[in-house]
Length: 330
Ligand SMILES: Nc1ncnc2c1ncn2[C@@H]1O[C@H](COP(=O)(O)OP(=O)(O)OP(=O)(O)O)[C@@H](O)[C@H]1O
Ligand SMILES: [Mg+2]
Image 1 (tube, rainbow, N blue to C red):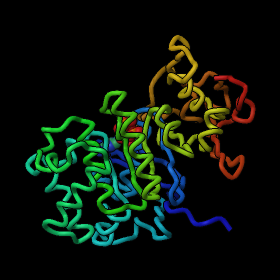
Image 2 (cartoon, protein in one colour):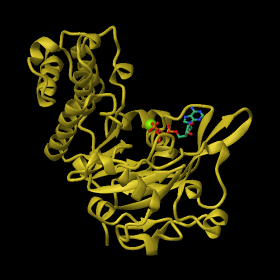
Image 3 (cartoon, rainbow, N blue to C red):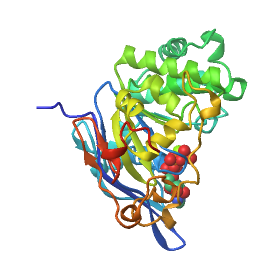
């Protein structure tokens, strides 16, 4: 019997109402994250990654609404919990860090006060004990001179340091799942690498699972064991990092791989995928990727390919998948 996953998203559907019309931004998304595992959710801007992530914590606000599916965390459906129960999960069992840490930190409190508040809320620590623990957490996220830094305000820190503070706050509650939504996108390349390394170390130390959301396959190779690729609100491919990088089966995944610099590959060979992700209000018929796909034929224009399992670890939604895998096409 396979062990029950820590998180299982089943057939998630999220809609927004725009000008009186329901628009489906996330359409039947399913994937899982095992305990202690790092799974990357990838795709270009507008594919539905953040909407999916926010749905897990029930952070979708009107005019957005989860309209279908289940989100099982340790076997419990988060979508059926009361708001009070959900608050206990948020920031306790599941923590989230966002792309722009400035918007999640409160500018009028010091870093120490904010971490201490998280510790009070989630672990009941108060006063000097909370402050001492805050210093400890800052040290864990490798902030130099934490005794001084806890008295500073967010605007006094660099972007990289603010993200470290956010990670410290996320760790304050010792989550079993950390959802990181593009945590390094706003940072420069060296700081990005440091933050990813930090997340990896902390994961090893705390044994938490990570759902890493990114449009950058370089990040995926650094941190994840498995990859879920989204396109226009759907999962189009899933596999282990080794499988995906060695043998992308969906032309979209292949395209993503060809548009990121990789070791040993000159910059001259980088090819961005032509075109852009469609808006969910104006999706093409058939396979949603067909207008941008070099392999598209009549069937792709007419019929939406189902997400099919190839193996325990591999799922692909492409009429051509069996033929393209490993052939270097696309
Ligand atoms: N509040 C909202 N109201 C209406 N539509 C929304 C809202 N939030 C997201 N959407 C739509 O849902 C789709 C998916 O958005 P989402 O933010 O999940 O993309 P993403 O994959 O996270 O992209 P990025 O890489 O830019 O963060 C987009 O088409 C977006 O316009
Ligand atoms: Mg996003």
